[in-house]
Length: 403
Image (cartoon, rainbow, N blue to C red):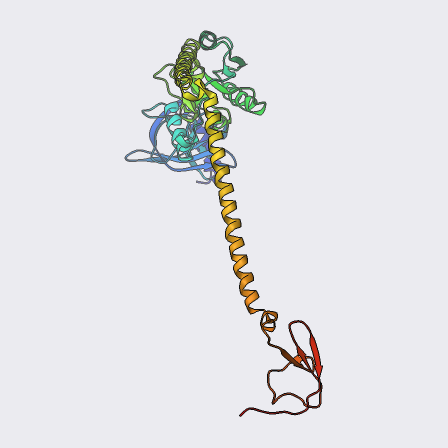
């Protein structure tokens, strides 16, 4: 009993860790289970969670160096397949899974990441139809963002040159696959907007697997497309391929060639349209000329144009008639005024005091005022007797009143 060593807790945990770490069966394993108690430690970037099945559970950790390589965000209830090792966390004496890689059980990791990002961006309104900008009918400059070596750029340039060679093509070469592809695509979109270098943008590449097309499903590309003031046509892959860029773009084209057809009008169709307008305008002009000829012919047969002096004579007759009426009215007005004036003079003459005096009557004034009463006459003052032909100053001698 005395020969049995006394161990510390740390020594025990270290010993158990050495046993587990030394077991090759536990150093490289694949484990399937369901995630619970998931914690995304944003400050360090580590993932902490529990992996469980119907009967058991085990703690698990995925450090930042490994977590940043997976495309999706783990969630509680998600069934996954993990690759890693079993070891002991000596401080707590707890064995746990140290995860190096994680894949969804069933759907692939990229498919899951695609659906997660799609749901998040859709909730933010980046797919709303109200955000879609119209594609210009006749763009002067077409921006193309794709690989300089792929078939997509050749297809786009061929279609643009055939359909509408008047449009200037502004090409920005980028990688369309690999780690640096998404940043280059996003920077190219921002560059076009910064310098307003195009009227419409074609962003895309040829077909491929979901891994090949993944750069166009990165969030930074989706955000660059959404903030672009220049309308964006997404042309990624073939008709059955879909990326996040397709949903955010103002217009999705099934192929790069189709994107070029949607970006510019057809020169032949434009010529036919202009020719139709010219024919229509010519027809309208001919019709207007014909109608004006009929109008001129009708006017030329009128009496005014056949005998223009007739109108002058009619005008002279009208003027003479008006002049005669004016003279007659003037004479009638003068005659009426003269009659009224004579009648007024007769009335005034009849009422004139001189007329009365001429018939033998006289007017008596006292104090410079006419007096019409013997009773009111002041006997102390002289009176004046005015006749029609003169005036006599008198001194009253006696006042007799008639009763």
